[in-house]
Image (tube, rainbow, N blue to C red; front, side, top):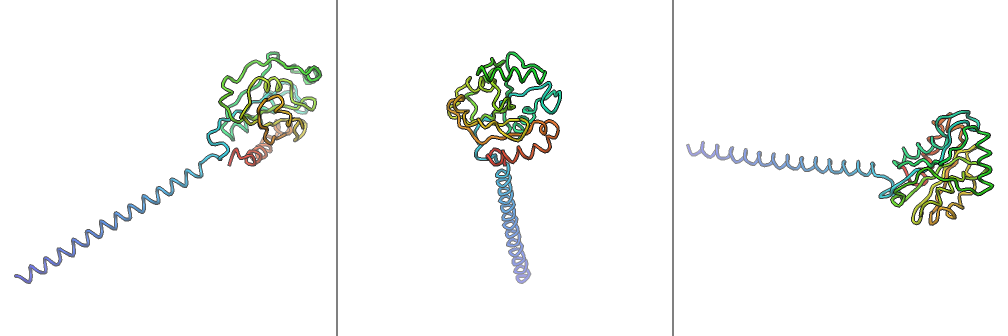
Length: 230
């Protein structure tokens, strides 16, 4: 009887140790799974992080663009510069603001060039139809325009002289007969007081209008180089 009791006691002790070991092993496995899950979450966050240059900054895409009869593309319902502005805003998550004059420019291409030429000769500052009410909130302004008579439209000068750009960066972009800038972008701080000017981009208007898929990679590459997208 005593021998039978010793056998039962021995088996009970063995089973208790086995159960305890199982609980420890399961607990360790759960801990490992939790650690793996946490590591995966951390990696995902790193991949989704915005570029350092953009973190905590508010971005605006302000553009002047013209519809109607345009050079090399005929009558259009969405301006060439507007198309590029949309690409930039989509890639950076920026807000958008269209620069419009109180007095619209003629829809006829020839008439518009004549008005633009006179404004340039007079160093005019056409009145703008609206203002960016919260400009002080923005850190970076992508500024877009077509090239008129080898210069920025006078409406752009009106825009630049309407705000305090201290501590802000301006990134110029434009559309024209070729993939070029006006060459006068370095003078922007003379009008947008306090602004720092970053490297701009020129896009052929005809290509933006008729083959935007060929423009989008170029815009993205430029933004990546500047550090605004990954």
